[in-house]
Amino acid sequence: MSKAEKTAIVTGAGRGIGRAIAISLHKQGYNVVIGYAGNDEAAEETKRLCKDNDIEGEVVTVKGDVSKEDTAMRLLEAALNMNGRVDVIVNNAGITKDNLLARMDEEDFERVVDVNLKGAFLLSKAALRPMMKQRFGRIINISSVVGVHGNAGQANYSASKAGLIGMTKSIAKEIAARNITANAIAPGMIETDMTDVLSDKVKAEINASIPAKRMGTPEDIANAVLFLADEKSSYITGQVLSVDGGMGM
Ligand code: NAP
Image (tube, rainbow, N blue to C red; front, side):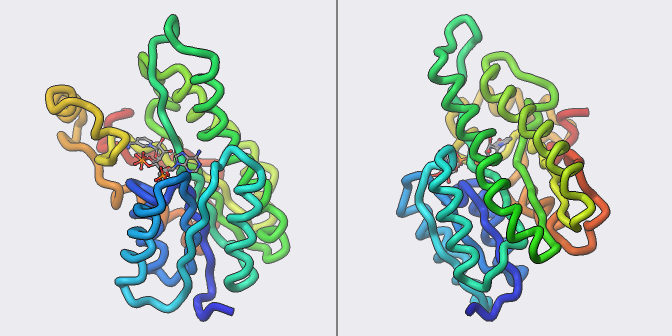
């Protein structure tokens, strides 16, 4: 049994936003399960960065595709093995396969929806039973500003992120009476590998269009996760918290 009282699962925690979330939760005293797709080195680095803080509690990595049920089961098992609880799940794993609608392959549509939306469905479903038993739970889904507003070239991605918002609200209604909340966070442009593919020119244009005049950091999103995960946030459910420097206003 771990000495930490609370346990969190963060998918897509090998890099970027998920890494910052995993580190922040561990700093708050959570055991953390780091989910990732295939980059072993990055996931081990996240684990090392968590451990660097010398906090009590365990940190484990679980490799697997979130769009497969087996991965959800293994993530859950890893959490329950630590202290028999799963307090927080953060459905953060996500991919893009951008193209204009006329050129978008059916496969690219399906893959993005499978990872970004079905992945969150599978882990939320798996975590529900232990959360109901312990009469506490926090489901936090990482959506996007484009799930609210849409974006040219991202019909698949926006559909998955808008779907995530609808699913979050439906789940929230189902489980609110059990002291389990479900909320979504809608990040704007955040500095990670996902946005690093943009040219400096495009980044400068985007920055100029953001009221805060800068891209966000993964820690900006992690701070919002800590807020929603807190026991004091028990009366906040079914919400979409924009963390976007005003981009979506
Ligand atoms: P990122 O740097 O590209 O990292 C993605 C993470 O997801 C990696 O750890 C990756 O694992 C994991 N992953 C990808 N496909 C997976 C799969 N099929 N199964 C399991 N894990 C998978 O992404 P990010 O920018 O941090 O984005 C994190 C989340 O925030 C995503 O849902 C994204 O849509 C959302 N978001 C990002 C931005 C932004 O500006 N960056 C804005 C709005 C929303 P490996 O490391 O093993 O490859």
